[in-house]
Length: 138
Image (tube, rainbow, N blue to C red; front, side):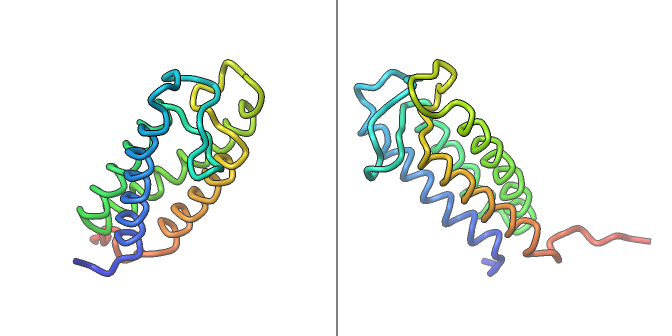
């Protein structure tokens, strides 16, 4: 296996998000699927079943891409980095109170985590594994 930073990050973040998604279902068994509030994961991050599915999907996608190779990992890290950035912005608008648009039960801690995840994924996707780009032919 290559020592690509994108592969390593994809595998690590993939496993983390996969575990968070699975564990989240144990916390949200009595929570509405798109409830605007939910129990706190590790005392900080509010979750609901829809958000758990999102964590599972992100984890699987990151893990599979990380195992597939540096080019796939770099692409997925950049793509999901952009998605997490958008989720951070959406969270700033809908989080707090019982906003009916907050179908992912975002709170302030979720917003910080989404922006931090976005920055790390985008930085590695943009700055690492430059040789993973296909070579131009003349």
